[in-house]
Amino acid sequence: MKEVRISRAIIEEYNKRLLDHLENDVIIVGAGPAGLTAGYWLSKAGIKTTIIEKKLSVGGGIWGGAAGYNTIVLEEKDFMDEIGVATIKKDNLYVIDAIEFATGLGFAAKKAGVQIFNLIEVEDIVLKDEIVKGVVVNNSSISTLGLHVDPFCISSKCLIDATGHPAGIVAMLKKGKPQAVPEELKEYFMDVDTAEAGVVEKTSEIYPGLYVAGMAVCDVFHLPRMGPIFGGMLKSGKKVAELIKQKLKK
Ligand SMILES: Cc1cc2nc3c(=O)[nH]c(=O)nc-3n(C[C@H](O)[C@H](O)[C@H](O)COP(=O)(O)OP(=O)(O)OC[C@H]3O[C@@H](n4cnc5c(N)ncnc54)[C@H](O)[C@@H]3O)c2cc1C
Image (cartoon, rainbow, N blue to C red; front, side, top):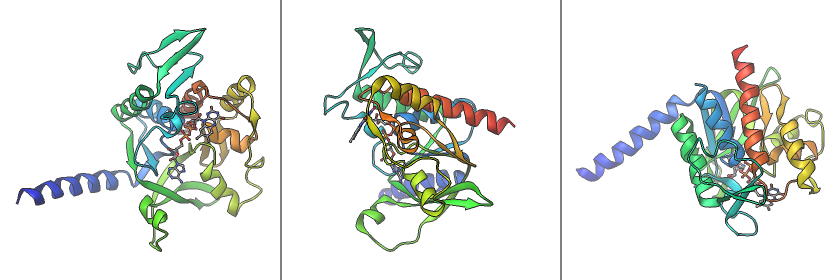
């Protein structure tokens, strides 16, 4: 029956991808601009990378731009030309349609080779011998419904918390190891000038096997919030990819 053949194609292909990605070089939690950018550069370098996103769509906080005005701003073009995302120069800034930015980054990351699993939520981390070695995941609808259903695990050599404002993965580590994270999980008030530099500078491995990128960095390091400027997210995503490339090379 044709209907069953369609179902079989979906289930077989999904299972194949899932089985292929139970073990990874890198897992990125969060498909916002920082996570997608990190995924793009890592995959381009041939590093086996999986992004876990709890929502249906990739893009994180991109879609709404600022206050729902779906336009985003960069101070530099970064790799927008390379991935075919159009920019408009205005007042020494680059303005981009938020929909084009979200879909362009998602498409570029996918084409570079990232495996993205949406509708999957990270519930916990796997810690072995004081090294973060993977994540515990479940279908997002299970936690939304509050059902008591066991999760499963996927492993990584390096894990990136790109969950944005809540820095949810670092918070999981902090719950079990309060001393592991240097600062309180709390951001300061908005300050575009210092925040962008800070977010990039502090993008780092904060615990063996666990990196932070994007707005999660602001949470972890108590930095000012950035204002509706997304350039820091792209630079942070690229920096974390560079750090991991160097580490895996060793
Ligand atoms: C309330 C609010 C305030 C904002 N304030 C600022 C600001 O001050 N400065 C600024 O520059 N921008 C701000 N933004 C805009 C924008 O959100 C961010 O700049 C940008 O999207 C952050 O990028 P990111 O990649 O770090 O994380 P995000 O774009 O937030 O992406 C994180 C992704 O991680 C996913 N995720 C989270 N937890 C899990 C989990 N456990 N498992 C799987 N997936 C998970 C989320 O669904 C999301 O898609 C704000 C947005 C909102 C909604």
